[in-house]
Amino acid sequence: MDPAILDRINRGILLRAGAYLANDHFLLPSGRHASEYVEKNLVSTEPAFTEGLGEVLAKRFAGDEVDVVLASGTGATLLGHAVARAHPSKPKLLYAVKSRGVKEKPEVVLLAEFEPSLTAGSRTLIVEDILTTGETIRALIRLVEARGGRVVGVGCLWNRDRQARFASPFFALVTKDFPTYRPEECPMCRQEIPLREPHEGPGSPGQGGGRARPRRKRT
View 1 (tube, rainbow, N blue to C red):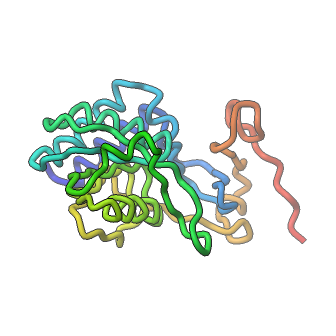
View 2: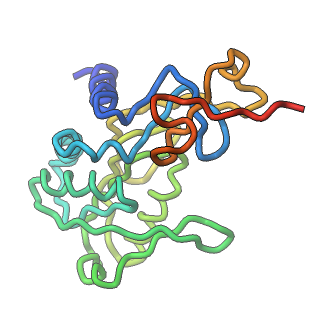
């Protein structure tokens, strides 16, 4: 199937799950504004969708022998579970915990109980949900290589960086970036479109039917 068609199909699945929001005015966790938003926590709320997406990733790497599927973070781990379940090698699912290393560089730590399953020679498939800078994936790769393992592939749900490159084969269900703006440069602000905060919990400003978050007056 043509990659562009497959990309649109997968994006449509995320749209149906409520994980991909578009044509609106969103406040991102970084403080920047955007007209699109990916709420990765919603991807796993419908198990059938999560399993379907996991099957697509597993099929992409079905030709590789995989001992371990490694992820980090709740969303990526749930997706990784679906990948591990669908992969013909029947690999184990492990997850690492994010931390901050030297100079605030992202690092990951493997739980002690998982260490016997990630050993020298372990063939590892890394699964991520949203790739923005690729730093979490690189931290997972360093973890695998430090323990003598080998990364056979990297799969992710949504790739926001078309320039991302890894030594191992890489596949994303959706590859699409969208522009973000500083508040003073935001075209949606100039059009006075209500600002929403999709990353906050129920009852927070911007939730509950798209209520607008009061914007500060510019000085």
